[in-house]
Length: 230
Image (cartoon, rainbow, N blue to C red; front, side, top):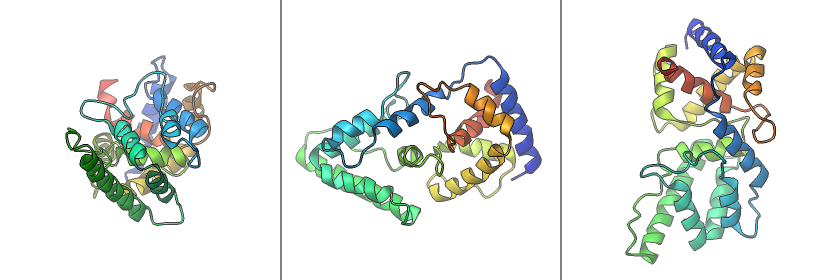
């Protein structure tokens, strides 16, 4: 990474936060708090708990879009095999295990559940579970361990890293390396107390997650990637 470029973009981000513009990333911070308030792997009604853990008062864009329905598919999987899915999440969230292996197993289990779902409902048009692209899995990890993980939005991340001067970028599927880069960026951001305070002023304590989190890294690299649009 080019340290001077990072400092430049941190300064630009602080200017952005000091402006009177709306904080467009706030919905992510709200969803993080909703998850923290509702997630309970031992809940008797797992599908109800999962549904309650992914809610937002502004938008559903994190888990629903054009040809993108990961939350709906996961709820269908839970309905046909709740204990299996419960154990999938237990494994994914087990920090004593290798992160790449956890993600790979989670995706393999999603593949298996999709095949099971299609066999139970042969007329279904569903042919994707939407968890291979790593967006949802990074969200699960970020929401469960907000001080350890950040969202992986590859297009924005790639553009931002190119702007910063990073060579040998992680690929779209190299999520473990992305998390390492995100932690490095977070170290730079956390050292700037003015930036941290400016960010928190954009948040509303009654609905947003207010503790330290690598979600700020997602905000930062999204800002860099879209700087010309602000």
